[in-house]
Length: 322
Ligand SMILES: NC(=O)c1ccc[n+]([C@@H]2O[C@H](COP(=O)([O-])OP(=O)(O)OC[C@H]3O[C@@H](n4cnc5c(N)ncnc54)[C@H](OP(=O)(O)O)[C@@H]3O)[C@@H](O)[C@H]2O)c1
Image 1 (tube, rainbow, N blue to C red):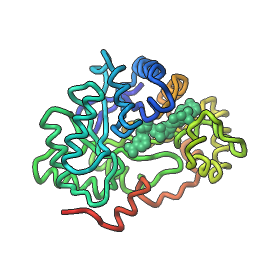
Image 2 (cartoon, helix red, strand yellow):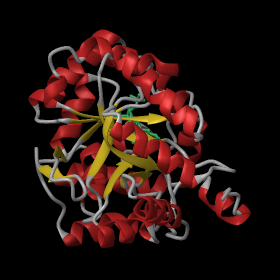
Image 3 (cartoon, rainbow, N blue to C red):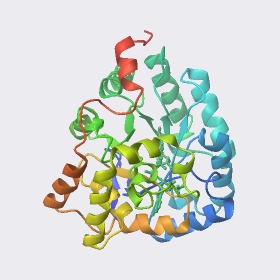
Image 4 (cartoon, rainbow, N blue to C red):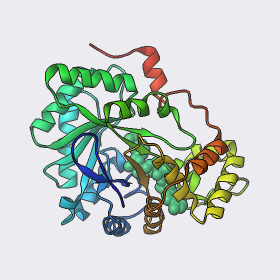
């Protein structure tokens, strides 16, 4: 496992961030415990969770199984209940109680919302840092302009800046290349990327023309069915490429995300110990420039909007409050 500096903090985190969204959902507490132990054994120190996962159950499970492991981990959680000052302050207290922790390492705004007041958000985030309840703050799914605007407010008021933007990034969702990734490189802010496997689409288990496996997220997530139809040729070529190179499709998908110099850490979601073991393998090799270009061409994704489905709407309505 490689370790990488998180923005300009001097903080080293593992290049793989363990996604926990399926903990308590597609895997029970005992399997979650095994996954966490194996992740630590493989050198993973960076964990991503959220208040919203399983209505708080994911954080509760982590709270029970983190025992004795906390000091080795860099833990990020997110607030989703609201984007006003009160929700940001209360949300962290509630997360800390579920996680059975005194502080987290990174506290993130989960989604920008209509009518949000960036000044109120930044003030509240600064306050939780000063209270010692989190060491750093960041956001998810922010367009570049909102990230820059928020940090300009922080600089003006001598408040803690956002150091990280967490965004979707994978072979079929590449909008972040327009603004978000160049901004991160220019400002040396951290980028953690979610959905590297396209929610499992690029793991080889979804085969074009074949039924969706019953024991999979795809069985209940209509997006996977849609993507499978739309990208069926590309997925077949992608799976063949992985087989020829002697790696798992999931490893290839993660290696493609890692190729970007703007990406600090891909957040890999796993539902089983086996999947964790496959995922960690993706951090043992690099794609060559030619391999990266060949895989990218297979999907021929239009790179035309920032990232996350809600951005264009927020941009068009300009619904921010002074
Ligand atoms: N900030 C945000 O707005 C946001 C949004 C979404 C996610 N996230 C974070 O990002 C993490 C990752 O996102 P994600 O889980 O949506 O996407 P992902 O990492 O692209 O996909 C994870 C899914 O892929 C399947 N999978 C993984 N390894 C596999 C393997 N080797 N073989 C077969 N299937 C495999 C599993 O599905 P099955 O369960 O079907 O086995 C797993 O749940 C989340 O856990 C969460 O921490 C953040």
